[in-house]
Image 1 (tube, rainbow, N blue to C red):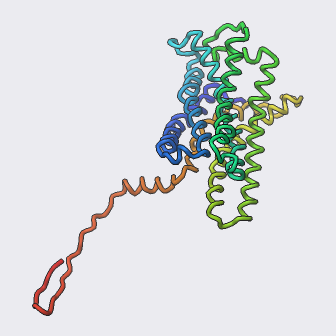
Image 2: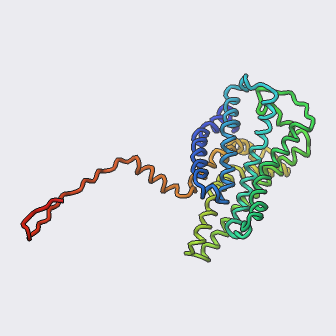
Image 3: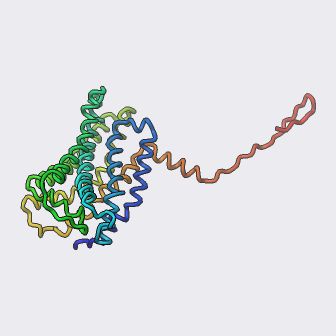
Length: 318
């Protein structure tokens, strides 16, 4: 049974506010510490949290408002807003998927091939450049599709992105590239690289058990696993079914489940902060410090005791 529009807005609204708060907490924790801020393994996590926060405070709130009222706010009913909305809505998901796919791949390098990042030039080539491309490419692609390629679509202020997403699906080449290159391929790569990383870490763990240096790399690998599980459960399922439908499978097979699980696909963004907070360095220790800080402490009073000095027959009190 397909989830009604009003209920689907509550699917987003439920975890939206807690997700925003946890995202801010995560970013504060990672950015306030110079060591965490400069660690290469945290850079993609920071970008994922930033992109997710942008989605939550813009598209997430706007989607809930549109589904509950049926119309875009009157103050925002302008063509400029619609095009910016369409660009952000189209690109933000793809940026997040590409960043997550790169994170799953890069974690292999960080754990098993650390010499790839040994110099500034290598870090620029193998670390910063891919991160930049994950952000620049979707913005470039959808800017060309929405603003440069001619598209005759009448703006509808009662539809998501004012109906401008149809400009992406009008041209066959852009629709095919959008579905395969931006949705299916990153999702499959996330699953493949995450599972491969888990297997390699387990194999390596039994070979070098007890080494302190390897334990640090192991923590770096397991930092990504909670996020990967979210993508495997919520994203990979509907993408796999979409690929099957595209390959010729009849849409009468499990289509109701497909529409329902796709309604929960936004949870990959909303629950990423919760998966991230679990793996924050010294998170448990900081929570314990916070709990003990608010717990009233007992005052310790020094106890007096006496010392008898036999020589002078005097008693002194300390």
